[in-house]
Image 1: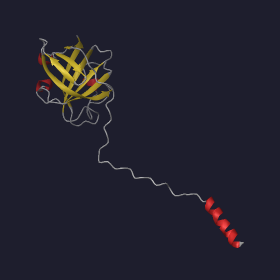
Image 2 (image 1 turned 30 degrees about the horizontal axis):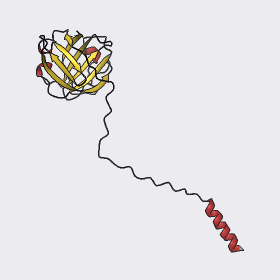
Image 3 (image 1 turned 30 degrees about the vertical axis):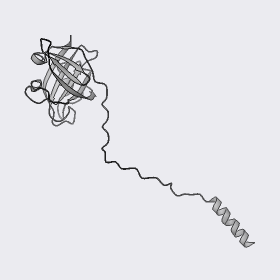
Image 4 (image 1 turned 135 degrees about the horizontal axis):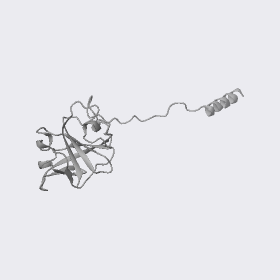
Length: 179
């Protein structure tokens, strides 16, 4: 009888036990890839022909057409003088600093009514005349909505205009209006 009670106690004990061991988790696969960069915020603008309003927007840059992936410049005779391929970087507020310790886009642009700033990287060498003889690397398209005019701010330096940029400087500002 003792053997039967001992056997019954073992069976009952076995039935009452639960598996408290943590389930096995397969280790996450490690990747050598860097995290993907965040997608740019907003959409790149496109315009029809914009005529130059400032004295700086003359000669080879007298008019401008903005495409989603390029800036096309035209002279006063309506002949396209050059196209500058661009990469859309995103939209920032006019109150954003251009560089560390610098001024904002709104303060640097000739228009105090700006509501939108679109940043782009120039993906190939733009003519040096676009930036007063220096190599242009980035542009900011500063405008208000609805679009009646805009300022094209051109930058030199390796860094995109940004509050943390150390190597970024305005080299030219052009003003254009809807033709």
